[in-house]
Amino acid sequence: MTTYFRDNVDHMAPYVPGEQPAAGARVIKLNTNENPYPPSPRAMAALREVDADALRRYPQPYAQPLREAAGRALGVDPAWILAGNGSDDLLAMIVLACADRGRKIVYPMPTYVLYRTLADMQAADTVEVPFDEDYTLPVDALLAERGAVTFIASPNSPSGTRFANDRLAALAEGLGRHHGVLVIDEAYADFASHNAMELVARHENVIVLRTFSKGYGLAGLRLGFGVMRPALMAGIDKVKDSYPVDAVACAVGAAAMDDQAYKNACCAKVVASRDRLANALRAMGYTVWPSEANFLLAGTPDGGSAAPTYQALKSRGILVRYFDQDRLRDKLRITVGTEEQNAALVEALRGDTSQ
Ligand SMILES: *Cc1c(COP(=O)(O)O)cnc(C)c1O
Image 1 (cartoon, rainbow, N blue to C red):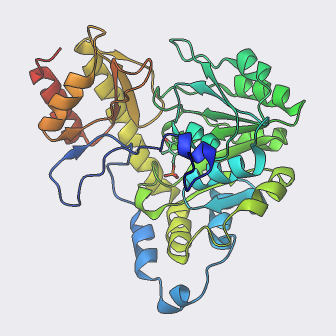
Image 2 (image 1 turned 120 degrees about the horizontal axis):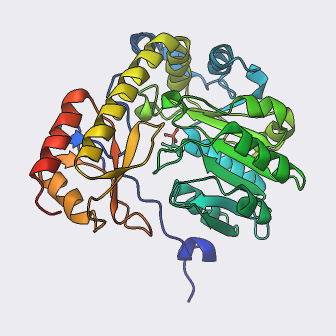
Image 3 (image 1 turned 30 degrees about the horizontal axis):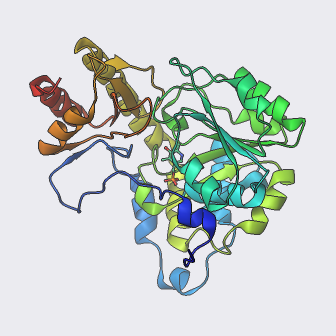
């Protein structure tokens, strides 16, 4: 049968994002890992200062002010930073530049679903290596697949678990022997006790990705970046959009980066609430994985399907994430909200008779 589309596009499943209720809808939204706290006041001031001329002209192709702010905040060379329209955009660039039929995309499962979607778009071969129940990083099994690109989300979604730098370094080292790229997707690093940024300086084949969507409370802005050494930058740069970061995102993002104190304070509140919520869920019999992110993976007390609880919460105006996917049907991924939101969730779960 002939269609309008390439074969692989015809056959692939589209990425399905979490539900986004209409603005103003009265829901407690704990399904897409947004920050419950607003962006930095300095970022909002920068937004108000965007002038007509900044919008009339094309933006800077490399978002230079943002690169410099990120370089200062993270202690990395701005020339090693490539910004994009969300870190999803960086993921897409990496797949476009590196993957192909026979140039495999490898990642452990379960993880961020978009890796699969991006590989399918490119008709690249994918290999999904299962995690064990404790989400130990399966270094040898990953290395055995000799991926052109290996994706590791750390902290991982949906488990919230973070991987130690010596394990990630062993993976980078092994992949480097055949020019495999290791992408460490640190979307949730702002909530974690450690991060892997230092590996970029030590391994030529490592890219660390960061986003403004989670820790900085700027998911609506669409801004993220990758940190990588020049050998990788040279190729990834060729496939980027001409202006992936618009003038507004560049200005607002740079101001948010410069206000690390505000971001750190918001993340510290989320981390404190996360640990309280984990205890409350465990007290109700849920299995909760040790999370270093702003969400919790919670397994039902009786090991049965989590779908009825998901529906019961939804009918009470509380959205959490249910993945109709192997190994996840008995679990919910719950974003950590404000103390009030978390209390409402716990209250609703206590009243849930579906378990
Ligand atoms: C949220 C998330 C992203 C996407 O970040 P954006 O910058 O909003 O595109 C990337 N990776 C993981 C693992 C995420 O959870």
